[in-house]
Length: 612
Image (cartoon, rainbow, N blue to C red; front, top):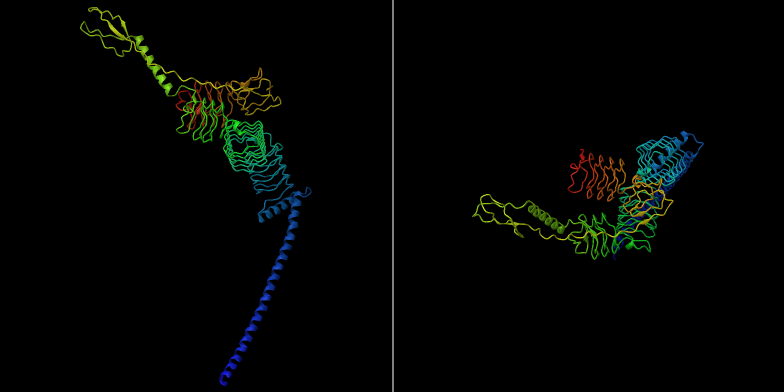
């Protein structure tokens, strides 16, 4: 390298050295600044946390103090009201349900206040003004609501078990889906059983509780007829003695539930889980199950009376039962009574029908031939019977001709004898004597009726033995099935027999007038009885006294009403399809355009009057 190149290189190095020094100095300054900023942020966050903690620490005692105030019996009414406002405001700010357990709010004005999902267990709400208050889902267990004004309040899904509502104003109060138990006290004039709340003896016919969480709920002796309980969780629920006829329990959870003496006739248990349930005395006649239904260990569903795969329904009474879409594959239905049953869309592969009895109102799957399966028709309205009736009519006509004689026209000596009209069997007869002509012998035709086909024999199902009733301590037979029952050894004076069903085979104690007991059956005296929206489908009320009875909206499908007295009865919106009304008296009965009658029945001809 030359001296000139060395000098140039030294100059370049000397020029770069200050720049490098400057760059290092700037980096140091930036690092110090970043450290200071980080320290400032940390200090700010720490101060914020400290301040927030102090605020929370100051607020927490106030919340606890407010809770203590509303529970303090010595606090004034104004102090408790201020504390309550503070608690409600705090709950709203935190988006939490108010916690007012053991609160003393007697006489407070809470009209229109939102207390949804509030914890009011054992709260004192005596004479509290709760008009139009929202208590949806509130926990009011063992609370005191005596004399409270709950006019227009919403108590949907509220827990009222053990609550005391005696003397409370419950006008227009909504109880739908709320719970009560035997310890809940209601006003004397209030019928809680029909309020929409559920609990013992509740009237919940047709209620929609699909998917509801009813674990541990008490439905003892309740009416859940035709209720929709699809997918509901009834685990460990008490359903002892409940009426669940015709209810939909598809995929419902009934594990460990108490179903003893429960009426499940006609209920749909397809896919239901009944493992561990108490099934003692349960009535499953006409109920249906599927291959997915799970039963308690050791319970034989095939012999329970329920309809399902491989079920033993031999000689079962399935008259008027709705089995539409049921799975009856490989079921034994021999000699069963199927009059009026609906089997449309049912799966009947390999089912046995030998000797089963059906009639013209039995509905079958499309293309199914019951006669080919061995079933017998119990009436004579089929094709063979129609041919028999036609032949008989024709024979009657021929006999009439014989009685009247056949006129023979006299046209003079050269006139030939007239040609017989229907020559089947001939006999000689003397011709009428003419004044100017000789007697002419004529052949008189005597028509012969065609051979009459022998009618199909009416099959009379075998009668079941009477069911003995031996519980002498039982006083309530509400909606009980007393058909084919032997109650002759019981003392029924003062017993509650409302809506119970009996038939002609039911045996009663000597001297007991079952017709005036309120039970439903042949000859029952139900004059003036209010049966509005009642479901009495298929009940035998032949000869019953229903004079001026209120049957508006009632389900009377398939009822036996032969010879019944329905004069002046209110039948607006009633469903009488497939009912038997021969001989029934309908003079001055009232019906509407929504009333449904048996096919071909003319109510106006029977004396009933249409009201628009």
